[in-house]
Amino acid sequence: QVQLVESGGGLVQPGGSLKLSCVVSGINFSVYSMAWHRQAPGKERELVGSITSSGRPNYADFVKGRFTISRDNGKNTLYLQMNNLEPDDTAVYYCKGGGSHYGQGTQVTVSS
Image (cartoon, rainbow, N blue to C red; front, top):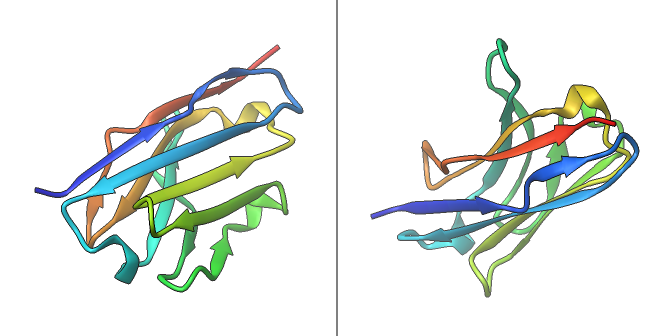
């Protein structure tokens, strides 16, 4: 079956950085576009950004050049590098791919 497993979340101070990873199995990872979504408490899930199978990324406006999405097709892994984090970035971050499959999410908390 399709599995997406995120990791790398945690507690970080404002202005700090985190790198999330999502290991994917059960699909031919290299042919799929992938995406990162997030859901803050009391809010709807929103798209952070996506990346095509060939590695071209697109980002939501709120990213403002702070985040970078990348992928390693040889490792079936999707990444989200987040820099200059803000308290409003606090959310559960999910990877999505292989159609409509989501991982279980990883918590990111930005707080001093």
